[in-house]
Length: 457
Image 1 (spheres, rainbow, N blue to C red):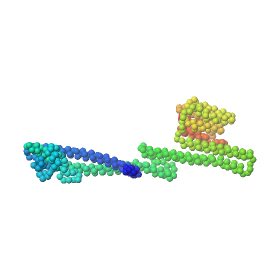
Image 2: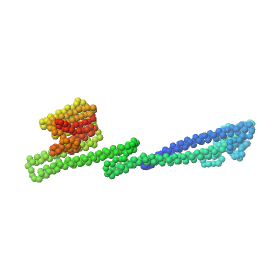
Image 3: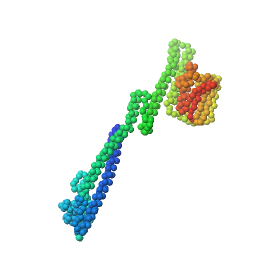
Image 4: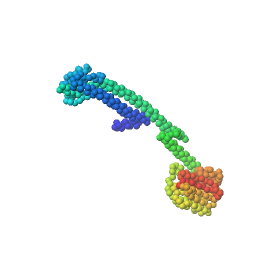
């Protein structure tokens, strides 16, 4: 693995807070280094310009005095000068430069050929004594070539720069420490809700029930939105668990009776030899119970599938065609019972899921034909973007005490408990209505019972 790859892998293994603090520290280091470098360069440029102006003025006055043959004028405090011939012999010099060679042989030759030389003697760091900045030029005086060297001391300039470096280093260090501390505290504060959510999730994994995360209601940042998302996920998980428990409880409750009947029929048939007619009757009874088990299982599975679906798949369908498809299977049943079954559907198109709505209408018709009396009428109309579908019979209606729980699973009126049916028909109808974003209601009219679906379409 390349060093860069190893560094990236190592960085990725660090805790999030540590990574954030390191990122802040590195970023602040770069910013502070750039800022300090800019400040240092600006101050150094200003000091060098001042030093250059002093040196140029001193050089100019020395050049004039050499040409005029007059004594050199005094220069800035601590300044030095030398006047040399082409061979480098000192013709005149200040007190501190009489026995000191300020120019190297190469520099002396360069100045003798007409080039100006400027350089520093001594360094800023490490500290060296007697630091100078000198400048040398060739001057013609009395027909002779003279080399004039002017030098000014850099002590004050170097001391100011060293002090600036120390202050910048101290300020940058303190700023970096403060920024890292603020970054650490900010990261910890920002991630504290995440740790709280993790702890709550661990509690949920240990089997806690009805757990919800404590999410502030007066904020709208990323962490708060994460908390709301997790709470919605917990709601869905709890709803799924409730549906699962309810499905198991409903199935075990309703399957117990037909299974017991099946066992009793088989035991009776096996108890002693039976004539063929009795065995045939027993098999018919067993077949009826098996069909009942199949119908009950299908109804439970349909309810579970519908309850676990976030949305239905809507598609445009002619309302008359939808109603006709739902009514057709029940026409012969009504005819055999000597009852009328009519439908009245508006000539329009609705946007619904026919896969679920057709069997829901069929359940309403089946209930009306099974438990009601007289003619059954189905009406379907669209009003202000909503489909209103009603099934009415001419029977005695629902018992008053049954109406509040008419759509509960396995709810049956006392008079019908010994009859056919599982008590899941209206529960399925309500589930279809809820999946479409609508409602279902049952009521008694003057002429019988009415169940109405009200769906957005």
